[in-house]
Amino acid sequence: MKNSIKIGMAQLLVEGGEPHRNLERAEKMIAEAAQKGCQIVLLPEVMDLGWTHPSALTEAEPIPGPRSNRLSECARKYKVYVCAGLTEKAGDRQYNTALLINSAGDLILKYHKINLLVVEQPFYSVGQGLAVVDTSFGTIGVNICADNYLDGLPIGHALARMGAQLILSPSSWTVDYSVDETQDPYKEKWLKPYSILAQLYDLVIVGTTSVGYIVGGPYEGKKMVGCSLAVGKSGIVAQGAFNEFAGELIVADIPIPEQRERGTAIGEMLKKKGYQFDKVG
Image (cartoon, rainbow, N blue to C red):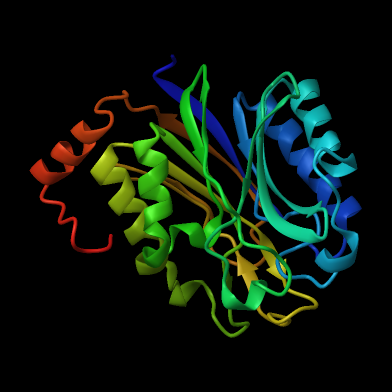
């Protein structure tokens, strides 16, 4: 296992209902990340159709399917791992899905978002499982955006107990149109829960978010503002710019922590750190 890894945090402009244009931009960022030596590229939440865009109900695709296959082709072509959010059609349901694809183009992990916001529940069904996967970079877990809210931290706790050394989290952080970078509301909202998990379990959590204005759906007129974030036990490892125009690739050198305690030994470790099991977070 390697001691560190370069992750390309692909802070992508996502246009609602425009999968072709979104995937074109994604491929360009994947190519740029590979050229800069990244081994993993992390893309935003449902970056094909956009978060809560009404097209989720009519234009979602199966996975595997054309959109996931395109990401697999990119992973294979540029010899990188790709983690991305897509809108998935599965039978009569749609899911807010995250994929992890290895550098050979193989889909090695698929996850359905669990901690769905009330406003997104008309568009996506609640996920029913968690998993991690062992890679040459260590054990990787995947979740999505609000799974890392303080009230969703049991999801991160579960991934950590499964052995995750690195959690990848495709995200879409949104604010009202009137909020600008002088009013950054995310220090408490995201840095706090990321830090809780990172410090308790000595892991690294990375969230890449989209940018642009939301068109269509319940959040129409709000904006996605970037501020992608990578946090380890010592604090912020990397961070993207905070504004709706900040489409950019952030290259983060991520230290991979050692795997330590397993099973009930984790509980003993948490007690020594002062964690109180009768309190959330």
